[in-house]
Image 1 (cartoon, one colour):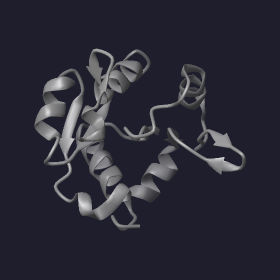
Image 2 (image 1 turned 180 degrees about the horizontal axis):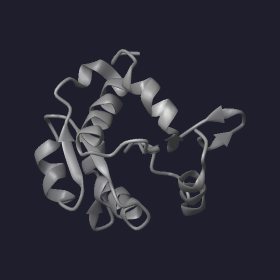
Image 3 (image 1 turned 180 degrees about the vertical axis):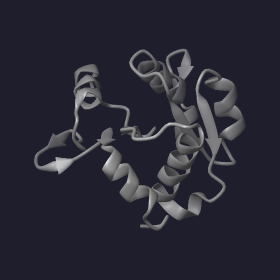
Image 4 (image 1 turned 90 degrees about the vertical axis):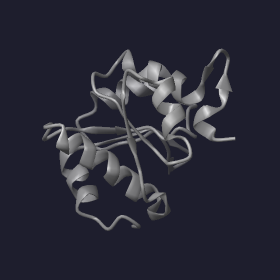
Length: 134
């Protein structure tokens, strides 16, 4: 089964994460693949769900698809919160600290960076201009 569509109580994992984020953020974009796009779109109708037609390009490729969608909506000079669906184990306080950060950062444990992470505009631009499979 698709990770995003795993049941968490009475809702899917993607719906649960989306609701957590919606209470703190105004604009949420979810990048889905062909196998889960329709179901995710039905599950989280209150956010922007976009299709990644090239999931073989990896995580950076998916991130670039999301950035392109946000760019085309007219937003610019924005910071980006990256929340992989398969890394839902972060606290509300971690989320709040990331949202308030003016620097690119992520939670750390034993010297290793984790998720979610927040990117400054400058780092969003670096991703935007990088190869999709990097």
